Every structure is written in structure tokens, then in C-alpha cells.
Image (cartoon, rainbow, N blue to C red; front, side, top):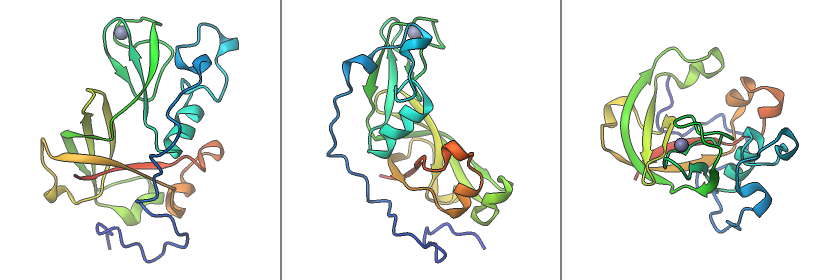
Length: 179
Ligand SMILES: [Zn+2]
């Protein structure tokens, strides 16, 4: 019953994994490029918020906050470094390629995603050193440590929308596919 081949015959919309437009304006406006220092500076379109992060992701840009003091990259961006506490952070576009450093199989997903089980999730270290967790598009048996992967971004499907909160409904889904 699982659908590991990604040929979802129930799909009604024409979203495709290949629809990522990477030819977008990569310039982040200066006012949003560094970590906000006060609540007034932290508006919802800032990439330091989840709505701002997902809006950029929807345009094909995976953003991190890079700590200028210790080098840690935070995905999604946070206003303060969770490694050293610094607020000296800058938004940095991340590469879309990396390698699997850990993975597991989900057999008991949230009920809305039951038809997808079992599926694979992995922690991927991007070529920048940032780490990101996400689903892998191939079965557990076809995944391995150090496997090169690339990030794909797509619109959420019906079952994924079913488990999203209202403000998350349009947030894109990211997945890793073997590179
Ligand atoms: Zn730091």
C-alpha cells in the first residue's frame, strides 16, 4: 500500500518535483539580512521567522542563519545562535546538495500520512555544513550513510495539508532525492 515510487495516482494538482525555480533573485533585502535585535525588527516576512523562511523556500531558496562568531548554521534561521548564544547572525543561502549522515524508517507516521508509510527520513549535512532533517524519496533499503542527495521542494499534497495548521497550509514540502 505504500507509495515509495512517488507515482501518486491520487494527485489532483499538477505540482511536480521539478518545478523549483532556482533562477530567482537571491538578494535578501539588507533590512532582513542580519538578526533582529528587538521585537519591532522581527516582522513576519523576515527570514528569521518560519513564515519568512518558508516563503523563501517556496521560491527555491533554502536559507540559514550563519553565526559570524562560531560558524554554526541554523536551519531554519533563529535570531540567536543555539550553539554560542551570539546574535551576530547573517542570512545565507544554502547549497541544495549534501550527504546522509543518519536515517531511519518511519512505520507509524501521523495518521494523515498513514498511506505513505513506511518512509525514510534522514539527517542530511549540506555541503555548507548545515544540517537539515527531511524525508527521503527512496525506501530505507535504498538509503545509506554518506549517500549524496539533493534537495527538492514541492507544494504540499492533500494528506500533508490535512495535518498542517492553518498558517502552514501553503508551506512547501522539502524532500531529499539521491543525487
Ligand atoms: Zn554561534
